[in-house]
Structures are given as structure tokens and as C-alpha cells.
Amino acid sequence: MVNGESRNTKSKQLGKEQSFLRMRMSLRLLVASVLVLTQLLHGALSWGKDGHYTVCKIAEGYFEDDTIAAVKKLLPESADGDLADFCSWPDEIKKLSQWQWTIALHYVNTPKDRCNYEYCRDCHDTHKHKGWCVTGAIFNYTKQLMSASENSQNIVHYNLTEALLFLSHYMGDVHQPLHTGFLGDLGGNTIIVNWYHNETNLHHVWDNMIIDSALETYYNSSLPRMIQALQAKLKNGWSNDVPLWKSCHFHQKACPNLYASESIDLACKYAYRNATPGTTLGDEYFLSRLPVVEKRLAQGGIRLAATLNRIFSAKPKLAGL
Image 1 (cartoon, one colour):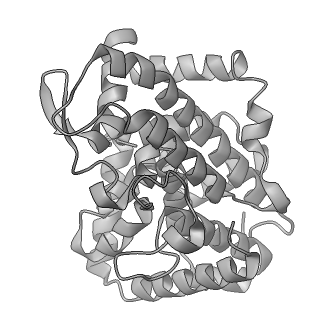
Image 2 (cartoon, one colour; image 1 turned 30 degrees about the vertical axis):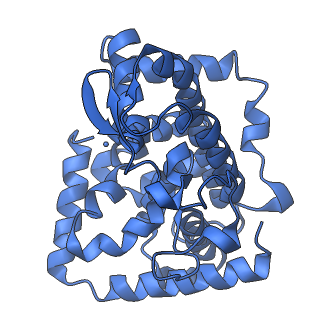
């Protein structure tokens, strides 16, 4: 884990640079963002959209009262506090030219075949700017939300709605194993495989195809049914694990370094294994990897809820909430 002083310095730098970029946004760009949010609210759901929706819907079931109130306050009134409908927003906006600076915040690349993650070594963008990766972003947006609760004067510097949406989305991303994958293949994006009879890339298999196949095979293509099944596992099979998943060492509000280390370990053991270029991935791969995907979705939801609960239970309360 990176030491606290170093991490805080990088988080402040990332927060300042992002705030400066936001301050330069024109009214036209703000309107564009609102339009994207509106589209998401009305059902334009892509982990992929289903994966992010699942993570955030699971999290909602573990929100404490203070968190429910804060989330409802930060979301548009028409959302009625439903965070899950907005959890793919960062994926939608990164396609727009003015938001392309966020692309590096969705993942962290690790050295080929090392099968481990180190913040100081790995968390940077292609220009070697430190802190520009998914774990750095989680630290940064956690700090933004915390700073608003600790000092109301900071509210003018941060868009807290954006901070909430980015944090919620990136918490999902860091639990997708190939979002911590090897630099050499861009997290599996350059590994071309066949998913049954369809050509795709390995990253897309883990973002979407495993979930899509599970929905079709087991849940009659119903995402709510799949979420209910995961919620049942959290109450039964995984119930003893949930307290450990919630915990964060050293009284930290967020601990994404742990989640990234888990993800690259799983990427090596499951995602990359037997998935060389040109391979056809079928039932054996699907059935053995689906439990990994299901658990990572559940862990992402539990940990997002735990992080937001720690943020919004802080005293004094977030000003105005």
C-alpha cells in the first residue's frame, strides 16, 4: 500500500486537475452531461452496463440511513434515490471528447506475468502522471466527498454528484479482474478469442459476455432475477464473508489497493488461463468462470456500500444533507 502522505498528495493533485477541467466546462458541455444522465435514468443501461447496475443495486440494499439520505440529495430529484440507474454514466461520458481525460481512470495496467499490483509502480496514465488509474480515482473521489463533509467551504471546488457517480462506477471497475490486467495486452483487449461462435476480445468476455450468457442460461434474460439470486447468496452462502469484505484496514474510508490486488490475482488464475489468442471459449470456461464473476459483482456492491456508509456517517454531516 502506498503511504498515506504520498497517496494524499497524489489525490490532491488529481482532484485539483479534475476540478480545473470542470471549471472550464461551458454551458453547452454541462447540458450534454445532463442529457446523458437523463438517458440513463430512462433505462439506457454497459463491468458492462448490466454489471455496473448490479454492483450499485446490491450496494443500495446495504446503505445506512445517512447514506440513503445523502445519495438521494445528490442525485436528480426524478431519480428518487436510485443510484443504480446512474452507475454507467462514467462509461457513457468517456466517449465524448471533453471527457476523454477520464478514460485512464477506469483501469490500472500491471506488468505482464507479474500477477501482482503495486500502487506506486502501476497507478499512472500513459504519460506517467501518477495517480491516474482506477485506484487513484477511488482515493480521489472518496477524498472529495469526505472533504465536503469535513469542511463546507470545499463544496465550491467539487461537484459532489459527479464524485458520487465516479466513485460508484470505479468501485465496480476495480472488481473486474481484467481492469487490472497486463499492460502488454491492454487488460485482454488485444487478445482476440471466440465466445462460443462469436469473435470478440477477452476483456469484452469479462465485461459483458459471461454476464450475458448467465442471464440467458439461468435467468430468462432477466437482470432483476440475477440480482435477486446474488442477494440470496449474500444472505446465505456468503454471509460469513460479508463482514470481511466490508472491512478496510487502518481506519481508511476506501481501500481499493486491496481490491486491485485481488483482481489481478483472479485475472491470472481465471481470466488469462486457457484463453490465448484464437481460442474458442465455451461451456468449460463459462461454467468455471461464472462463480468468479458473480462473487466480484457481489463484493463490489458490498464494498461500495461500506465505503459510502463510512463517508456519509462521518461527523460533522455533509453540509446541507
